[in-house]
Length: 197
Length: 182
Image (tube, rainbow over all chains, first blue to last red; front, side, top):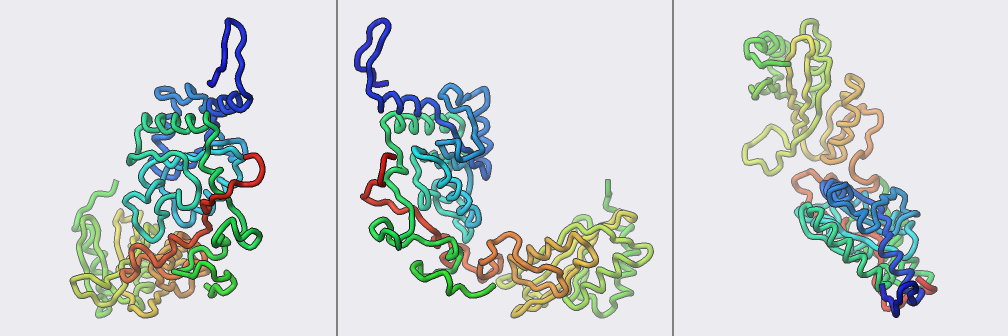
């Protein structure tokens, strides 16, 4: 905490510093466990490793009450829109941990159905190597996010979302959900041309 | 517990061979069951025989899956094979029916009216191999997204797909800061 001056019974600081300190030490995680990394994430939350020491023991399965998304596991084509919806529902400021090889890079699953790194689609603050990572790695990533939060930084603040038509400066081509899954489709093509089936 | 004793299977094999005659392409002894190979047009009749014939009673549907032999080194009668596994609770015997389906527009009669469990497994085979099950009540995709093109477990489908992975809405990094206090 950026304490400017202390005596025995009072302290001064800036409001931002105090707020960031409070946020960093009360990160409420939204777990998105889709694979074996989710099991290690649960282990990290249990008594032995105990993320309660970092103030983030409150697992919120509701994105609207959480500010730390933990993507732990592989994300398929079909799951990515769900993850994006959850990310968009979380209030700012928010942080994201990409847990394990699959979430960070697709891992060994270099296949037609697997997203090759969730950072292509949502902003990621901390990457965690491992397959799956041990709970110690989880705590390390959590502390990295805490450091960012204390400085008031979040990757999500460097990104914007929205409709390209409303503000061309914001995005080169924001794709609507209708254009999902089309093979090699031109990304700027309107979705209405999709063939049936 | 089902213990595999080859002698117990002999009456079953005799019945199937007598029923099918020339239409039985082959038979193979697996680790603890026998596999009967037929063409797609004979598969449903054989499975119905196994289910309804007195003394057989293959009432339990275990699994239905498929194989694509497109790049298989050993020559096969047809490109695809649909494999149905059944169990007879009264005999304590498992059996597999391997039905070869021609490529091009692969088609095979559905088993969904014989076994309720075949409904979703046939949808899965349709989804991933593109084998059409004639008479299926609701043949639509079950695993892949509804608007997916192609059948990805076919051997001529590229492993890394045809660009589906990148075709998504994306959060673009910009130099602009978002409006308002973040």
